[in-house]
Amino acid sequence: MKTVLSILFFTCIIIPSAVSAQSKNIFVFEGGSHIPDPGARVSARYAHLFNDSWSMELGGLYFNSSDELAGNAAGIVRLVYTVDFLSIIPSLFVSVLGGWNITNSKSFAGFDYGLNVDYLYSRKLRFGITLGGQSVSGFESEDAVKSSFFFTLGIRITTGDEW
Image (cartoon, rainbow, N blue to C red; front, side, top):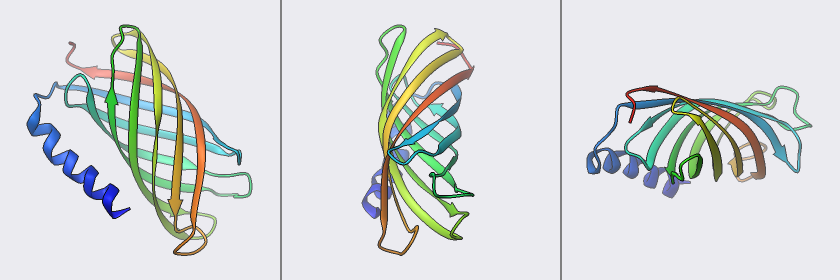
C-alpha cells in the first residue's frame, strides 16, 4: 500500500510539470455493482486533464455488499491514462482510496484499478462503462484484505476551455 501511495504521489508531482496542462475539467458520475458479492457502488469525481492522455480525478465513493446495511464511504484519488480513438475513448486507471466502514465503525484503505470505455456523444458529454477490481484492507481486522470486481455505467461532463 505504501508503494502505491508513493508512486501516485510522485506521479502527481512530476506529470503536471512535465507536460503543458490544458484548462479543461470534467465531472464524472458513476453507478453500478460489485461482483460476485452484489452491492451498490456510486461515485462522483472531479477530473483535471494535464494533457490529452493523463488526468487526475478526486472525489467521493460509496459502496456496500449484500451483507452490509450501511456500507462504506470513501475519498478517492485516481490517475487515468486515456487513448482517444475519435468517438470511442478507452482509458486505464489506478486509484487509491480511504474511508470509513459505517457498519463496523472501522477505517479502511485500499486501491482499485480497471478499464473504462466511453462513447463521445459531444465535446461536452461522454457516456461509458467501467470494469475494474478493488482491494480494501481494514474491515474486520488489521490484516484482512477484501477483494472484488465491479461494473459501473457513467457520464462525464466536460467544462472549461475547448480543444
